[in-house]
Length: 217
Ligand SMILES: Cc1cc2nc3c(=O)[nH]c(=O)nc-3n(C[C@H](O)[C@H](O)[C@H](O)COP(=O)(O)O)c2cc1C
Image (cartoon, rainbow, N blue to C red; front, side, top):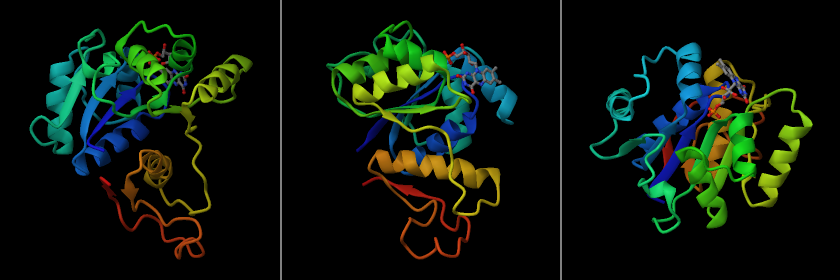
């Protein structure tokens, strides 16, 4: 796998998406990144990043520098970039991760709205039967949320809620973030050593995160 599309929407938990971006870039994956307007607000609220607003090129420069991306490795796509590869089924297939995924975006995808590039990219992933990983963050869930998630899982999307487990005895917020990011990397088929695997040594006596990387398969 060489390319991954990643969308960060306006649910709480921007850290999940940003950590995933960091690890994908470190693993030399080419990343097509989409950031919703609401996600910009959440990133500003929840993180120390000074992400430029409403400007994909400036965001690309900022994030590439921040995470040490190689030249051409990171493309930040504008919300109406209908000529981006993710906007068409005739492009090279790549998995799409929406992390975190807001209830609003889940609804739009479940109903095929395609009103912005993130929704269109998900619509393409579903119609082409490509990997679509959705990381919702909401609590409690309404019947609408649950119905939309049921619709989406039946269509082949993976619903991977941002609900970290605690059996690794997390010592920090980063450990909780890495728990979810590790599960996403597993779904992408990428090897990762963010935490010991269940049934392997390390689970019986949790050590926290000793290795912090992901690898392209
Ligand atoms: C700080 C903050 C936290 C939010 N947390 C959530 C959340 O956890 N889940 C959710 O579905 N929406 C959350 N929202 C509301 C969404 O951002 C809002 O519904 C928005 O329209 C989603 O748009 P998007 O899907 O295009 O990003 C939050 C908004 C803000 C500003």
